[in-house]
Image (cartoon, rainbow, N blue to C red; front, side, top):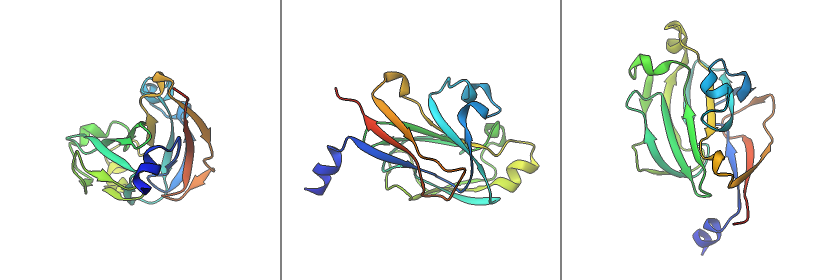
Length: 166
């Protein structure tokens, strides 16, 4: 019964996957994100150098980068959310990252997804900003109510997403 009610929900929160200072997606120093080529989103500059990244929503892990620097999750509402850990971190070939889930796993909001050593990433000259992007925004299925404060703790609400009437 509860599962059926949850599946029929037309709204869901997207939560902060890490703690830190929020940054407008247009201010991320990478044109792929700042020009919203991947979709609408927000970014977080982490405040702790070693953090556990948690799931921003309940859903299914649909992508885990082989280099561990990014993962995709499809929410129960149908959003495809990319969490990209750092900038140019693909070049680290997985060093500084430890995955805690596998592709195909169903996860709950707030469930640990990976451990990240941001101090290591920074020492390698890579950006530590974490963009959180809804990659299927071009489909125009969702409306966004941004509620992110200037600083967030992992698990705090960033966005309330509503599904448009079909």
